[in-house]
Image (cartoon, rainbow, N blue to C red):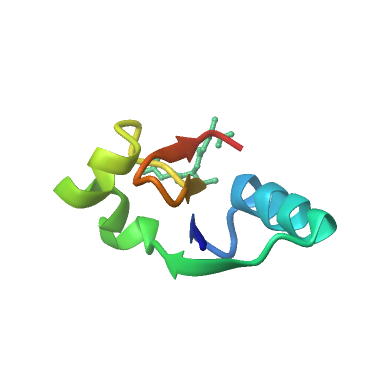
Length: 67
Ligand SMILES: N[C@@H](CCC(=O)N[C@@H](CS)C(=O)NCC(=O)O)C(=O)O
């Protein structure tokens, strides 16, 4: 199962939500509250050193950043 690290007001994350929806790909969502520092935690920076959503975590533990 894919996991999308998302922030609902983010237009960059929205693009990924739309694409996954159009492709019919199911995924889990983890909300990252970017204005509360959740994109700058050590764990999140391991997923995306840029500290930004969207990030799509794939099954082998790798993560794809950039909308
Ligand atoms: N080039 C990136 C930009 C991502 C980006 O700027 N994300 C914003 C939300 S729209 C973010 O997470 N900002 C948090 C921060 O910079 O701390 C993309 O297209 O995905």
